[in-house]
Image 1: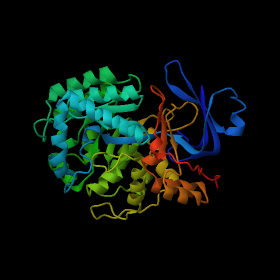
Image 2: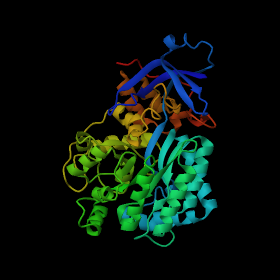
Image 3: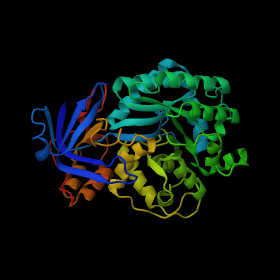
Length: 455
């Protein structure tokens, strides 16, 4: 068993909206199970819990904040080297940068090198669970899964399916792609903390035969995940309408092929109507909101108000390499900006909202876990949760220290952390299985300015 003393922030893992739990001086107690996974045994006020666990070794982190490890609900590991590449929009960006880079993943050595960097970068930013695209090459999945397993990360990934409208080097063959997908499910799904996601790149890249095969695999393996893109960009939506004139909407294409269900996560979802939102809510599928990518590629602004009103499950995602940063803080900042916007991006109005700091943090932890169907497993410090957590320094930079020291409430303090922090605030990352604590001393400060009492 292990115990950690610090300020603690987490959320009810089973709620469909943020219900924060907070201890200004808290104790987190964890223990490894027979399966080798460390889980939370107890969490609460230090003065109360320490008496119940007097002999458990204690790590002192007073002045720091311990929170659940962040969850990235949509990210492309092969696009690590594409980040920061300029283009006029989504489709030109794919053609100019993404597809040429992804073709290099036919080389196993290249795939391993990028996967190694990618997993290290996730941990450095405090991300302990990621839903990840690989490329169309089966070896790209093998490389990522091996690196994630070595670090104890919870990683869900899949080989991209794209048998049409794709250049040589990334275009796959229909039947072989489906055989490869099933072989990868058998090899990796449920091993250690790994999971498989059936991964049509997006509807335009997949023939009907490939989409039908993906749906059949999803029915055969109901506990695997599904991931793709939907309604991201006005040009993309127009293209889907031309390719599928008889389907009611972009989302309806996936639904027709049996790809809309729980554990299905669709990135972006900017241009969805009320029927789409109703279908998402009824199926249990979720949207991965990707604000930095949407801003960078000029795709538009996600409509939080209508999605919430429609009961859509959602969580936050970096969408690297369209996204501009691996950092959850950058993603939360962008989500706040996107929420305030009064138009979607196609000129149609939307209701602007000011997302609270608790809401933003929940979308990157317990809310994202709910979207994955992993509520109570990851994304929380509640007892029974896997012990993935980050230790954050609220005085990691002079400006951050100055601003957080003046906060008059927990909400104000947390909002300042979201707006001003970056990877320098992540001083330690603990994963529930494998190597344990990762220590990042570059952001550590000598000043300990913990959160204020909850008001």
